[in-house]
Length: 171
Image 1 (spheres, helix red, strand yellow):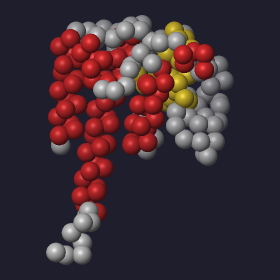
Image 2 (tube, one colour):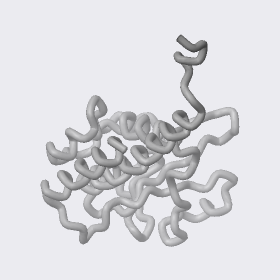
Image 3 (cartoon, rainbow, N blue to C red):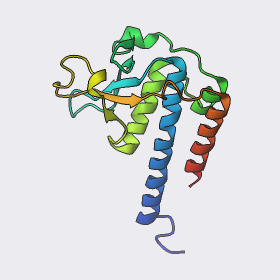
Image 4 (cartoon, helix red, strand yellow):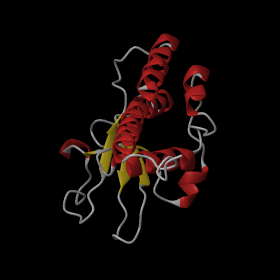
């Protein structure tokens, strides 16, 4: 038995990280489709980064439509306690132990994805969806584009997402 038998090679670690990155990216359509099912007129989940470099994680801000109107405010603790709407069972099943109706569970998943992808998760919120002064803040908000309003909404679509996530995770 070699003295290195219990160690992982650096290339194996790199392969593992690449697979984990692909899996994290594959989960984003699940989040997007879930929030779209809960907020059919929503266009963006808006999140804000931490206010200092000493903090980590993301904060849910709001669900906004394409023009920037707030459909659901999420930035305070009271708003976090109110459940999101129901989702189709096929889509809810993709969340495992997390409940997509609980804002804190959505935030926790996004934190995990953001940590895995190292800040490559979100785009800046488009100008038309920003509120006055947000673009000039030191920490501009980010947006996750929800499934388009004209996207087919059916159990088959959720099955395809689940199959795609499964294929990515197997690689």
